[in-house]
Length: 105
Image (cartoon, rainbow, N blue to C red; front, side, top):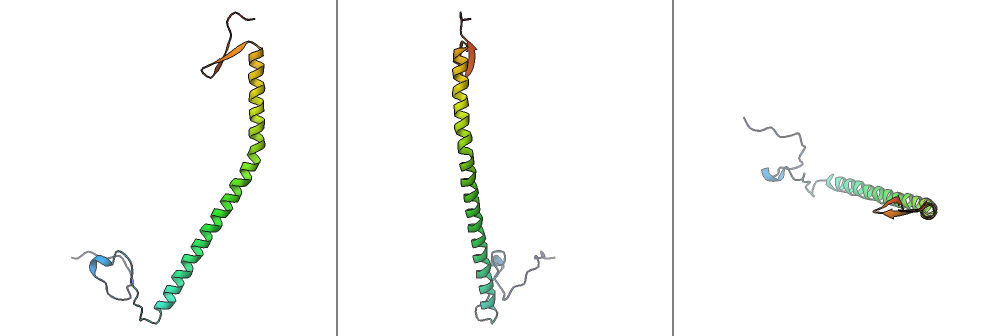
């Protein structure tokens, strides 16, 4: 028995190797223009939705960056103050770790 194809409605016969690629619509059919317009409208709608989503994500990212800027400044200031306090207490940094300096306190 031959292989069974998945159910597809073809508007006109196609060669065997082309039926997997894309359905074909004959242009002389009266409803072909309606189908083409519907497809074009659907593509344009999806494109508009993608662009709208990109804009929304860009606005959200800019908003979050604006919120994060003061936090980053505060974090840098806190790091500088902590470093100054540790150096004053007799510590030094070695490979990223703070260690007590020898012979002090």
